[in-house]
Length: 70
Image (cartoon, rainbow, N blue to C red; front, side, top):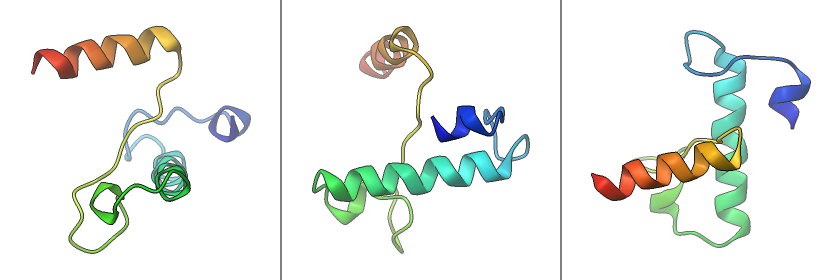
C-alpha cells in the first residue's frame, strides 16, 4: 500500500531505488514477524534471501507456477 501511495513504478532498482529498497525492508520485516531464519532475509550479511511483492493475486499465482516449473 505504501508503494502505491507514493505512486512509484518499482520494477527495477534503476527505475525507482526508493521503492525497491522499501520493498526489501518490508519483506525483511515480514520475514522476522513470521519467524523465518536469517538465511531468508535480504539484509543480513552473507544472506541470499529476499523476495518480491506482487501487485495482484493473479500475478502471485503466475509467479508461483513459473517457480514450480523451474
